[in-house]
Structures are given as structure tokens and as C-alpha cells.
Image (cartoon, rainbow, N blue to C red; front, side, top):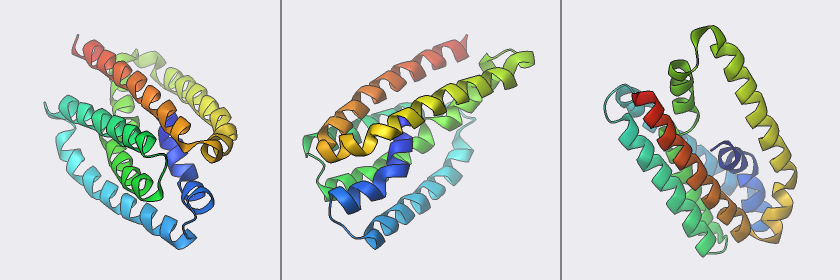
Length: 171
């Protein structure tokens, strides 16, 4: 989830302004709207995260991310579709991703190794994400569709990983 999340957060303005031809104020306003909606969803999610609905909401988050990237790939990176899926993906990350990783790692890693394992895993993921970020503008400019298809694949991978984590967490 980290590569799509980082790419959306870091390169959304780049896509809308450089590739899509929209203004910087449009891109910034869209990010503000997505953040406000995400904050509101976070407040609600705080009430749900420790209930039996957490895993169902996680699957909704994965499904929303999958649908948003699939639609973006189908419509070839049109700015209006890209704008809508940016908001949808932003909301999906509330339900899946780092919040659940932190819950699962607190539960699945041995207590005496938890901080070290979390630090190592974050370091690995952030390094991979940074390397991917070096190539993101080239991919996005050449073909937003290819980038979105890559995110579809990554969403399937993190959906399967999340399903496995749920299985391990229930044991």
C-alpha cells in the first residue's frame, strides 16, 4: 500500500498540473478536500477500529483502492477521473494500510523485538518507495495507464497480504 499511497500523495500535483494541464490551485484544492474528508473518516474509523467491523472495513478499503486504480487505468489518466479516484483512494487508505499495519505488528511481533522489527520493516518499505519515486514522473508522463495498472497489481498484492495478516491475527 505504501507505493501507491506515497505516489498519490507526492505526485498528485505533478500529474494534475504537468500531465493533466490543471492549475496548481486546482490540485491543491483537491488535496485539501481529500484531506478534510479523510480526517472526517478517520474520526469515525477510530470508533470502529476496535470492533468486529475492522476487517470488513479493511476489505472495503482494499476494494475501493482496487476500483479506483482500475477505473483510472481504463480512462487513461483523464484529469477528472484521476481527481475522483484521488479522493476515493485517499479515503481507502484510512481503512487499510499504515493504521492496520501498526495494529498487526503490535500483535504479531514478539514484544521484545517489536520496535526493531517495525523499524526494519519501515526502513525497507520506505527505501523501496523512495527508489520507485525516482521513476514515477517518467512513468506517469509516458503513460498514466501503465502506472495505474501497476497500482492495480500492488493493490491485489497488499489485499492478499492483508488477508493473510487477518488470518494470522485471528490465530
